[in-house]
Length: 294
Image 1 (tube, rainbow, N blue to C red):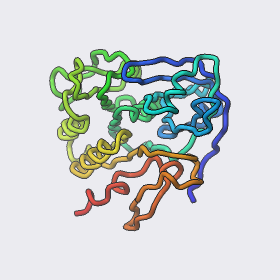
Image 2: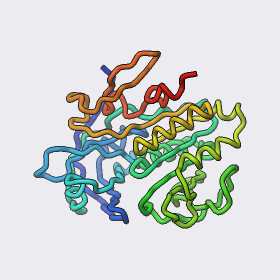
Image 3: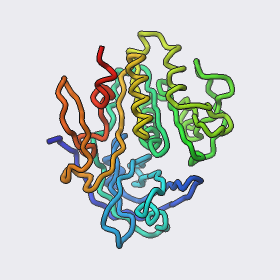
C-alpha cells in the first residue's frame, strides 16, 4: 500500500471557463486546499454535474497557493466532460485532490526535457512552473504536441535551441514569459510547428548533447499511450532516464476499486499497480522493461 499525502474534498467555485478549438476547455476554480498541496503530476477527481455522481480524473495544470486557484485543461470526449463544459462561472464542482504520486524533480538534474501531448500537456506546464520558481528555467526545455489547435495562441520564440530545425519557432506564450525554451510539434501543418512526431523533435535535441549531458538529463512525459511508448524508446536509445505519467480510465481514483491497474516491473519483479495512487508517474523502465533489456 502506497503512502499518500493529504487528499482533500473541496467544493470549488468556477472562476473562469474558456472554450478553445478542438473541444478543449480551460477551467479555473477556487480550491485553496488543493492549490496549497498539489505537486506536479498530480490530478483531481471532479464531479461533472450535480446529477452525475461518477467523477472524472483531470490533470492539474497550474495552481496559485497564494490566491487559492487551480487550473485544469480538459477535452470533451464523452457525456461527463460534455456536462462539465456546460458548467458556468459562479457554479461549483466538487474536487477530490490532489491525488497520485507526482513527478520527482531532482536538484542534481542538469537538463529537464518535458514532453507533453494533447491533454498530457498540463503536467508539463505544472513542472515548468515549479522549475522556473526554483530558478531552473535555463535548465528546462519543453516540447508540446497536438493534433488539434493548441489551447493557446502560439507565438515565435526568442530562444535559439541547438539541434532544432530552422523554421521551428512556435512556442507557448506562458513558457516564454517564464523564460523557458519551448517548441511545438504537430502533423497538422500549424505555422512554426515541427511537422512530425514530438519524439522526433526530442531525438534531434538529445542527439546534439554529449554523453555526459545525457546522463544528467531527465525526461518527463504525459500523453496518449502510443506517445509514451515512443518516449520510452527514445529514453532507451539515448540512455536518458524518463518518468512517464500514465493515462488510464478510473472509477474511484483513490485506490479502492483497482480498476486502473497496470503491470509495472521494478527490480525484476512485475506486479499490478494502481495508476491512481501507485502512479500515475512511473519510470519508463518500469512501464516498458522490454525496451531496456540489453
